[in-house]
Length: 172
Length: 313
Image (cartoon, rainbow over the protein chains, first blue to last red):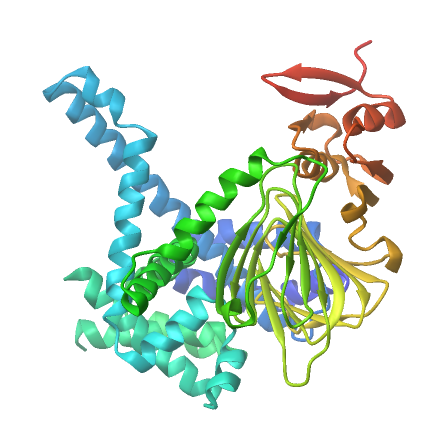
């Protein structure tokens, strides 16, 4: 679909998209920001063949929300790291603050990976298998359904179970 | 409603979004029903992207665990590959490395090519893959994960489908010759023989590419452009030629950097300028000089990188 066509569709369902973004962001101002971002994205880049423009627009809007919350999370982390560095620098010596650089960041990340891996290994077998195929091996839901001889909705259920377990395991 | 139940529902909505038939209206109604639903969904979505960001590292740890429990030796195969990478850097630029895993070992392998050096991987079943310099290919049976570029020559075999993941794209193939190039600027897929299917969550349906057809996607997967290519030029980098057709200069620089091992940057004012033509990257050639001459640009060396910029008046 040409960008004009997609923009036309966007105008057509603008109200629905706005309502969705408000529900998703919890704020009208954030929703309006993302709605303009969506418009810019659609008008500047011609999407490839799109069979269901409505669903494409919802999906794109949903991805913009994810980008936003992801960078908010990263910002939060950076700020808390900065605070930790400052405290370490004041209490101990400047040497500690100097060493708290990339190496330490790498250690924290490695720790996070170990944490995630241990949690994944504790998920019930069936759900764990589907999660590993989807998230680690990169198979799509339909590919997993085909390989395991189960329905796509069974794959979705396994994924939901796996993610629920994973969250609970990481919290404890 | 208990908190656990809320998270279960959030996980279910997240899983549905990865499927084909997502009901966005129903999702909206669920979000509006209780503000805690949104918070639970955000938490699940963040966990989901944490998994995505760490997928290859988690796989490595799991592979090591599996290996050590299988033969009592921790991480043997992985350690071998680390050693191999070091030796490869020392090898000559013009030569090629041949790696021939035994057929039954096809299951789990990680291949990494050093800078300015191509690695050829030959499988016993006749499949062969040329891995471009500074690239990485993870092989898990018929599922592969590519970072960088590679040319695939996969003979058709009854009942076998190869799946290659490159960034957010899935390339599915049952027997063909094609190339995949993933640079920060763009993902390019070109087919010389047979056909492949390309899918992505950003695409409403899979795109089928046949010989002479190609696809260029921007990094976010937001836009996809179909291109036509000369079949004999697909993967021509294997013969030391980089072929460009209306490629932005930034992408040209990234590819020259990858294949020549020489860091090349482009002045931001000209990074979007399109370039069409062939650049030789054989040993002894000076690809940056060639490009600068063709486009009448100036070369400046900044921090060890060659930087292309317009002539200063």
